[in-house]
Image (tube, rainbow over all chains, first blue to last red; front, side, top):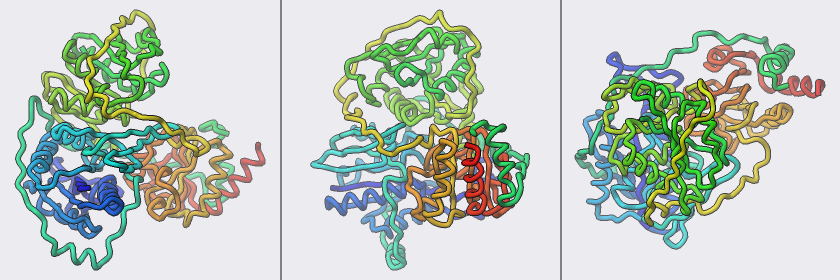
Length: 254
Length: 322
């Protein structure tokens, strides 16, 4: 079974998001980068499925040259091959991203059985790239999955709902978008990280033209901060009577 | 005309759908005034007339033998066929798991862009949409141009308003044409959770524990507090990554979004990624040894102290009252 995990490089934001002066992006001058948490799980899932069923694992991203760092994280976790669809660093719309990824997948030598995405990216959260890729490839797509088993070419995928899980069964090849919690991503060893540094990454120049209409960012804004300080009820267990008052009279849960 | 997609549970519209109608009604009033909705409702369980209170003029009740269980492509095909027939200027769905999933497929079939998690719209020829990034800790203003604008509406952001009166709602029974690929992805069956207690997303009281809890055993006191208040226990991502709690308990950007009457956050610092999961709480009470922790500022009430000291005394005091 050949499995592809698609990931995205995103800033590792701290307690507060700061924007650049032109309000077009997050000021990342003092930030590190990571990949969206859902996608770290997509990588882990690719590795676990191939450990169980045999085959190959591949990781792909669309982003600036620096996104090679996140691909190398995947390689260090023991993904076999990596592809970077290299952009000039500008944001791509979800439609253009999906089309570039689909075009690349169709041109690759490997015909993937399982294509894993994060349910939504941590930063833009457009909730659609995996779905659009599946449509371009003409394969079924199940979203928001937190448990996945492959049996005889069929994916048995579970999605959380209120009070339980709904179970889907779809034949491979298929696109599955996953959520954090589906597994526990492994930590790469220092030795694996060193080796991943020298591993070759396939670079491509993506190209995409999309259909009618457009969806374009104008500017970003940080939401107004709640500047009102919390009311301090007290220190230590001396505060307990005040807490009881809040529970009883304030929110009436006692 | 604006077309809204109303999700319901056995005929009861979900709150997120009623919130969506607040924005849909605003957009309808800015246009020709017509607000119509569609529901997948083969059992005809929804009382359409009730939606008149929210300004709805007509309900397209979708029925089909293959719509007995959730099938996202079939739901999307139904919305697409309605859109082709009635040509709404905009299609709005609630930003739930199902809403996002189905609208993305509508976007695919109509070859149109989709704007997810919107909170406001400036209508015109093109629409300027205000939407959430980073779970709402960053706001994007974007321009959406399309013959039919596809929007999902961020949950827990807009008020539910019923300015009108029930009644006067026309019903159009609509049977979509579904083909085999539309039902390839369909819920096969549902496994009910064997976890006892109140689900995190629905709890009126949530007691959260973070790194300050110190280990898995420290949650016993938090469990007890949650039990006494009829609530549920949650955790920060830091605590889940430590392996102290299962991921299902995680509150935040990549975990549960809660909306209780009160969130009691114990030993949690209040990182952006955590706060976007609990901003739906009416009241936040933080217990933390660090008076400077972000959550002590962002919350409504703060107790400066060690949760291991405060929570047991609080539990005893509540027990004394009951």
